[in-house]
Amino acid sequence: MIPQVTPEQAAAAIKKQPDAVYLDVRSEEEFRAGHPQGAYNVPVVFFDAAHRPVANTDFDRVVQATFARDTRLFVGCQSGVRSQHAAERLQALGFTNVSNVAGGFGGSPAARGWRDSGLPRGSGDPEGRSYADLGKRA
Image 1: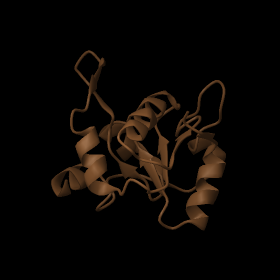
Image 2: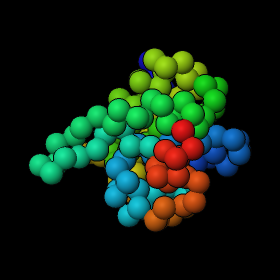
Image 3: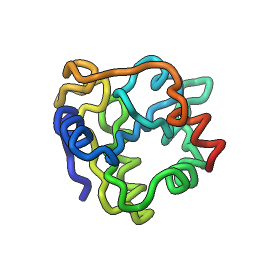
């Protein structure tokens, strides 16, 4: 079972544990438009021309090349659905300290997101944390 945390809980844990990571699994476009400050971006899916989700076949490889299996990972997306799927995949790969950020960045009917929680945000492609950079190193 994947633990569920609020954006505030994730932010507090990341502040206390500098090696903890917010892993944003939204698309590169969504990430560029706004993301939790300090987040890394590895999309779990891409969207085709008809806006249908298509699995990112490099997701596992890029995450495994970027983070140790015991890294404290807070996995978030737009609302918490894609990130739940990604967290389950990571747990199946042997990652031992994974939580889903309920409400993700944008929120859901059941949970407020990072954006509306007043937590620090960034935008664009931060060097070394964008999917393009992480993919090159993987």
